[in-house]
Image 1 (cartoon, rainbow, N blue to C red):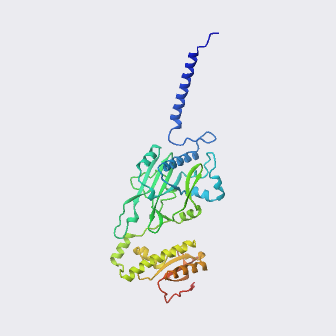
Image 2: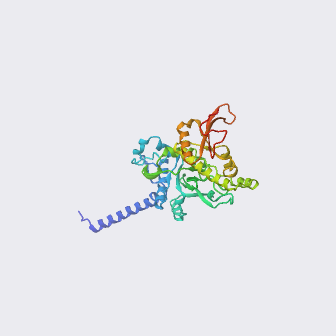
Image 3: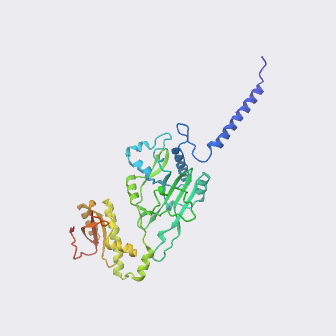
Length: 382
């Protein structure tokens, strides 16, 4: 039997190994390293959930790299989390099972405090390199609008990132002077692609919204580090009633040109005190977890002239009768009395849109003096 040439065998092994390595490199560059989802399900096929999970993962990795502390505000995902608090132990579930972030919708919504956003071209460039398409929506900054100037600078309101048919919505939340967070409405300009995203499915942007500042907690969701509101149920409740109406500065300026505001020291002092009182009432009712609204002359002043009507001499708010408790009255009375104001309230029946059914409400009048028609105590009218 002829002797095997060791050099030949060694050369053959080297060539075979090199070819195998080249094949692996080709396969990696051709299939594995392509932008987009690379996670296969247990069946070995790429599923819609895998694509959505990978899209969210890629976006969160970019946000983390550029230190953008986005937090989850997607209503579908948060509802899944809030349905059962015991599921918290399953948030860190292993494997690739996407049970919270992969909803039935092709949209996942995140929010970002606008003061933490610095227009970083590197972030947008990196997102583009990962395969994301971007639709940037801006609007006028209402914080710069006033009765003197009606045009503000443009600020980013919403970013829409699209990858493989899935949308990541980033909502910018701005601090307003009332110590709340605000986001603007999403309005497409005429030159924008209206087929870029399923706009009707977006949670945010149909109208402007206002929110209390949520406490955030960092957790693990479907294997990804995600910030979520600590009190999810409260945030979802806020989201359902978060529609924000901006003051109509243009109409108010026209009105005040015809009927100038009273600038006497007494009127200026009243408007300042009335705003402080309204702030106190809002704090007290929020502490009692009771929703309220501006009523009567106070609502008229805001709607008509973006201010308090100086000759009204009171501040009017309303609450639903179902929320009324004697504790409510005494809490408001105590808070107002300690601020050198008097408090009176009355009940009334109101017809809603001409229907025969009546809705009972409680209307409160926060007054600078005891009016003859209302006692400082409690009087009830039907």
